[in-house]
Image 1: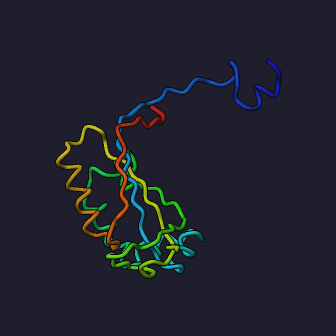
Image 2: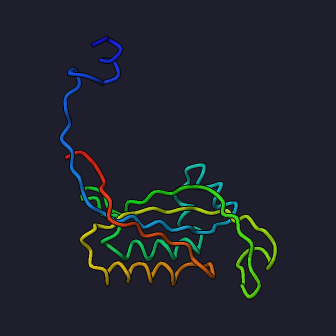
Length: 154
C-alpha cells in the first residue's frame, strides 16, 4: 500500500471503529420563513429560529415530543436546510404567499429530525398531526420515511 493510502486512512494503518446501527424514521418538514429569517439562519444565527413566531410553533411541537430527535447523548436533534419552494396556487386555494394563478417562490427552511422506528404508529400520527396543525401553509409539506438505518459510533 502506498503512503498516500495511509495518509487518507485507508488500509491496515486505520483502526476499525465499532459502529452502532439504529432503525429510525425521518420526519422532514418544509416551513416558510421571511427572507430576513432565511438570511439570519444562513449566517448561523440560532436565535432567528426562535424569534420567528411561525417557527416557534414548530419548535413547540418538536420540543414537546421527546421521542423526536433523541440521540441518547444529544436530544432535540434536527437539521436545517436552506432553500426556496416554487409553486403556483390553483383556483380555489387561499395561498399564504403569492396569488392564485401566479408562480411564487417562498423562502423555505427544511427541518429533518428522526424518531426511533419502534415508536408506535399512533404516537407517530400524533406528532405528525401536531406538526400539520402548527403549519402555516394551506397544504403543509411533511415527509415521513419508511424505516431506515442511521449509523454512528458505538
